[in-house]
Length: 172
Image (cartoon, rainbow, N blue to C red):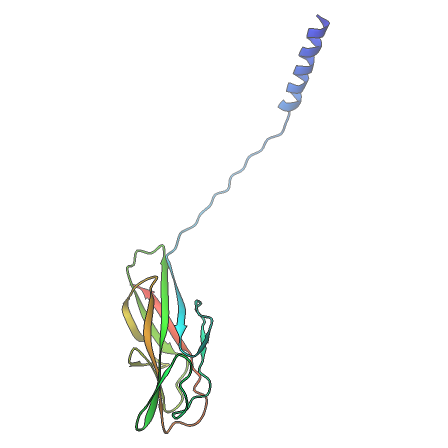
């Protein structure tokens, strides 16, 4: 009988020790809203281009002249009173959490062009004062290719023609 009592006492002791553990609980309430979004990347451009696949690419066309060679990725056409460098720019727009089936893409120069220089995309002359629509039915997740021309008048000063083309995509 003494052995049975000792076993029962030991089992009862372990039960008491584990029953005395402290417990606590808490909650975390999470609030949030999924928003629709689009992303624009420059996928290609003439010149020595860096940063493709991002929203901040750059193209270096180097020193250019009417009677010189065309920069990498450009063609050169000589006219009677001007000359044109031509290439393409590839732009891709991707969407997330959005029911829109297409988008509008515009372009605008970052600053006024140098005198005697015209910047064109898809045949439309760009300015720094107003955006130019390149497409109003852009296809998401597809790289759109837009013709890019830099027209240089023979009367333009020999100087830098640096500028920025700002692209904006808006879902329709």
